[in-house]
Length: 253
Image (cartoon, rainbow, N blue to C red; front, side, top):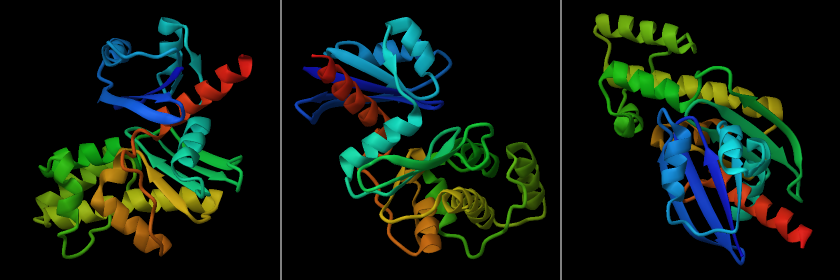
């Protein structure tokens, strides 16, 4: 039997299909302004027996497809453990939210914290700042690593930070130095969440910002250890949803 998991996030949608405990298919697309239509397009031609949804758009998907749903916290915990059974802490920074999850040696969730009320400290924050500085988002992290020094950004509010960046540019400050300051501000926020939950090794880093080389380097320097980063860091939630669907439906038989 085939079990699918779909993660409908604020910026992207991911889907994974499992068969006999192996990932046999995975797809990704932008969420866009019509996530359900884009999800339908992603599912086109995909063969599965059961599907479970997670992410901020899971309830919309549930209504449209009569699918079961699972919280992002549980999906990410299960997906992370599937990929790396030794994981004890999970940090996910996505488009418009960030979460930290602590699990014990058998994968049980012990504590978690989630920021989904504000774009501060997320991919959307860096996307806005990259545009303000005239960088493409895919080059932003690389350009920040070329900075000579950090220009600290005091505000984490996207609107106020954008104003602060504009003011620094008007003063003739180097764009890369400002970029490094912005990356530091995201990492400081992530570290604050990590410390409140507790940093236990090994630590898995997932989500879209797990592709940003500057964020990775600053995090590793701050916690003084290497991060475990999946090959496809945005697929973790979808993997977890697929596994939970498999376990739940097999128990019914």
